[in-house]
Image 1: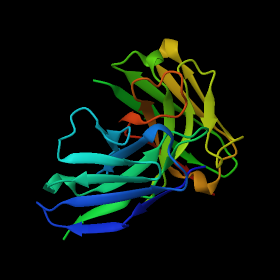
Image 2: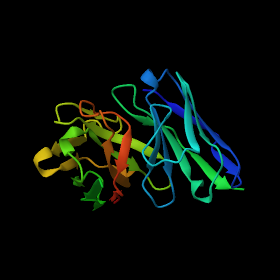
Image 3: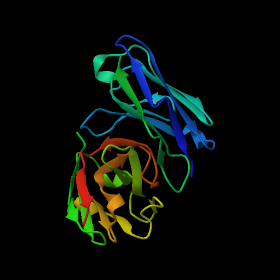
Length: 109
Length: 124
């Protein structure tokens, strides 16, 4: 099973700043099958990025994903107030299971 | 608009059973793989089980293998999770989740639509 480790655990930033989230896999993620989700308090997760770098429908272009192999990054270029939430990475390139990272909390500084 | 609405959650004693249901609308249901993902209170996301378009390919997390069964009824646009031998650690919010485009053959994929979830509490 591929283990995903996200860092940092908590990110404290101000609106307008740039946010960078890291997701490291214990083994190579096949075909860059890596997704990112945002979860606001009391809400279901929302897909942001799939295939490591493809934005989902309706996701603003301030969100971008990159990486391959075992190291992946989600970047928010300029934080808006609604971006403060928890972010999860997920790999889907390795049968027989999907795994999620433990999450990074983005809080207002 | 695609909607997923879960039902069937509740409180049950350890060793008991529950059957969760998910009603899907706004999509060609049999074009997509589907899954259940849970979130324990204050914790992260955990994939529970997945199923491909016609149910002949399924997968489970090790934590539920042998106790839970995922199934679907395409004629009813519905997804199910039969949960037996429930344990305290199964307490969580259970989300029904739809896989993205191109997923119909797979029981594991990225998730592009999530239901709001149904709560399962296992306690004596």
